Image (cartoon, rainbow, N blue to C red):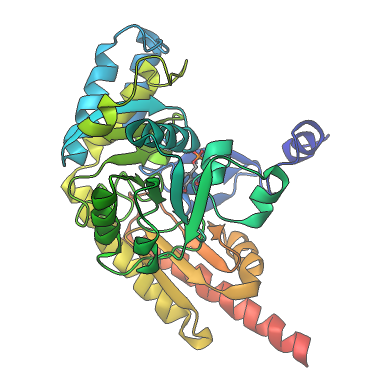
Length: 395
Ligand SMILES: Cc1ncc(COP(=O)(O)O)c(C=O)c1O
């Protein structure tokens, strides 16, 4: 009988790399495959399952909302949506005035770029080398990486790519700039942390030029780095923040948070979405926010430090760089990235790639020390196996 992988290969567009694994269910920190084998989830579905799989608060809230009302267009009001927007604004602080809900991270960035054009009357943007903001046309225009972009060029408006984390970016911001779009820590581009004051510098330069700073916190936000927003210490009063991934407990959702200045520039009806802000997603947002307290964020920071430290020890013999913030950790293993990922999977630990040579760990925040230990043991075993095969190839 043909299995799910075979059927997918026959029926689904061949759009994704294949991991050779059929996943049947998820519980807490583990995913179970179709043969009943358990895998330690160190990637949380590319950063989505921040509370692990089947978190009782999320399941209960979603079940209840599904029975009450799943969908409702934004032209009708829903209490759950209003509460979700309020709770998000409260958590983000810093003078943000309004929320626009979307269905994905890319869509949030699409909206944010349009809002920046409306707020400034300009169409020139600065984005960053190795930056990733999604693959829909607007978000793709801000995404670096020839392979994704080339077949579709020319893309939208005018985008210039600045070196990430360098002061040169500041000089590119001028009176023609509509906006700057930046990840506080680059994710897809290889888990790259900019130097302190980089984001603060961008915020100042944008304010001087009258440009809008779009902080793409789709991967770094919702507590991933140990703070609710990775940018908040440097940019206390942001113009625009985009969120996605774990925002609604696994229900597809994104959000744009806007300052009063930007919000006032967006006319009614110019940008809407049938599904955006549906009550099911709104209930997911409320459930996630109710769990994501300071205690949990503290754990993210502490366990992140422990994970990075132990991975560093495991990688010392190869001198691979380990970097990141909170539970967003990258190991720069170079051309053997795919072998390391495969070997980790053989050890029943799931991580994901980031950039050409980086293995990325984005575990759920419910991670415990024992899981850190197991992941590091598997990583050490994978590196040892790669070393052995390297030696065999040369002998
Ligand atoms: C920083 C960042 N922005 C945007 C996106 C796109 O989000 P989505 O895949 O939900 O459209 C991603 C996805 O990985 C991301 O990491």
